[in-house]
Length: 170
Image (cartoon, rainbow, N blue to C red; front, side):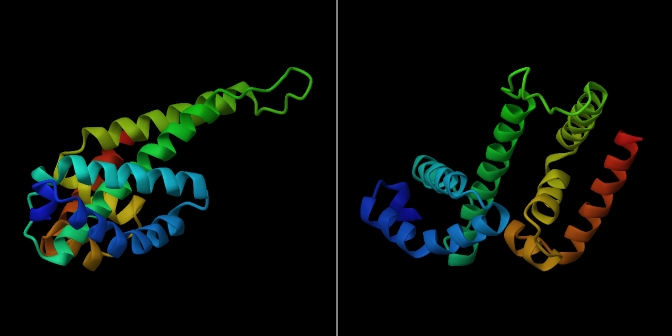
């Protein structure tokens, strides 16, 4: 990572060669659309190249890989959000219209908005834990390793986040 920070293209190529197969497999477990996976991979490595100087972790493989996964997972969530926004406006002719009832669409959209707003209002440390455990489907142990914190802290933050979401959505 230090070499990439200094603009070393060979170091970046080596990082890509070593990590892209693993990252692609992890992304495919969460998304079956190969185009989305390819786009997320490209966006992830572009972000790594651009932001290598802001990498705050130590230079051990585990933390660099965790940082890489965090970027990829965020890019995948962004891709899902973009897709959801695009699907909310169906391009269907009046003849072939099979859309759900307007009330169902409004309710589903409202629930999506409420949940998204509740997640955005969570403090960043709680949101990170929820993202890792729920959206990325990581275990407590994996989340602790990814975020470089004790497992007990992960459990506490997950509990606090659930309580806050429950209150926000009630």
